[in-house]
Image (cartoon, rainbow, N blue to C red):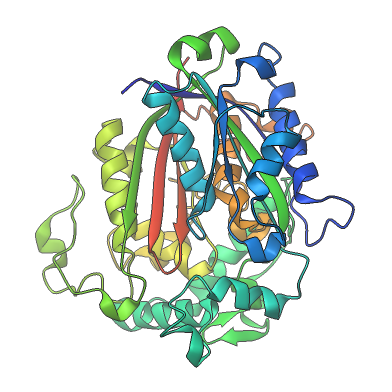
Amino acid sequence: MRPVYMVSGGITKFAKSTPKKDFRYMAKESFDQAMDDIPNLNLEQIDGSVVAYFSDHFTRQLMAGIMVQDYLGLTPKPSKRVESGGATGGMCFQTAWEAIASGRMNVCAAVGFETMSHVNTWKGNEFIALASDVNFDYPVGGFYTGYYAMMVKRHMHEFGTTERQLAAVSVKNHGNALHNPYAQFPAELTIEDVLNSEMVADPLKRLDICVMSDGAATAILASEEMAFKLTDKPILISGVGTGTDAMRLSDRPSREVILLNHERAEDYKDLKYPGVHSFRGGRVAAKEAYKMAGIENPLEQLDFVELHDAFTSSEIQTYEDLGLCKYGDGGKFVESGAANVNGKMPVNPSGGLLACGHPVGATGLMQSVFALWQLQGTIGEHFGGDDTLQIKNAKRGLIHSHAGTGTYITCSILERGF
């Protein structure tokens, strides 16, 4: 396989509603920003695209991908649509990576979007719940906040995780977003604000949960030869990994913990894994990406992480899956300040899904754009002169995209190629 680089990216401001912009306009807005950031690239040099959106129900349009391809001026070049639930954006990014790595394309645009504002929140939750087992979970009133509430209840029982630790994630991510002009829900919160917000599914409260959004994002990937012609700050995609698991939690048998290189089996000799407290697919995705990128200890070799925090609980669970701390120590990890912008391992310096929003098809690509800007050292340039969230001397970061209750998970590692 050939080396693959990310050379540019663009993003719209995520919002609760964008009544004056349809999905094509938003996709083009993000695409145009990416093109403006790399003036050496023209449309003729783009060999094709991958387009991502989660739900035809939200878009109210079948085959919306080809409409975006046409609106961007890329027809009749190759294109495909990718859908992988909440991991749709991350899978789109890796599908574009595959197009370059295989030699099929030299430049590929990965474009993702979602327009969730056409329906109210309850109808939106119904659409999202269709990404669970519609013959088993959905008919008995299943919805995703309920699924995650059950998982974190088990995490609390197994490891002693507390509601205050969950709230610390919300405070951190909403606070980071105060410095991110693209974020939908920046807020200066306290632990008590989160704990006193409305209960949705015990123990998850309104401020523990991401919001529905409209938005789009674009990542432009290129071969090594093209990357160095197009920019003096190419970002190498040094590792990719994808993991899966059964749709229903009850169908996931207990096995031994899948160990990362810096872990020991004796650390988990009494742990039933994955149970309903951990995402085995996330561990597989991380392990595969770390192997490709040559990472032995992520806490020492990564400079930041942008992960899928649809819920405060899933951020804590994912610390553990990625090996940033031991299984069971995720709550302590955030409580210690290790995940803060100035901590040992900044997690979601952008504000994550909790504060940026979660327009599903765009989310994983949003992460790639923020990672690109971190590694190029251009956060301040893109954030209106505010470089508060710029990780100093960032050389390598990880982006993590997640579907269902861990049914599809992608991890991609980006590092400076210059």
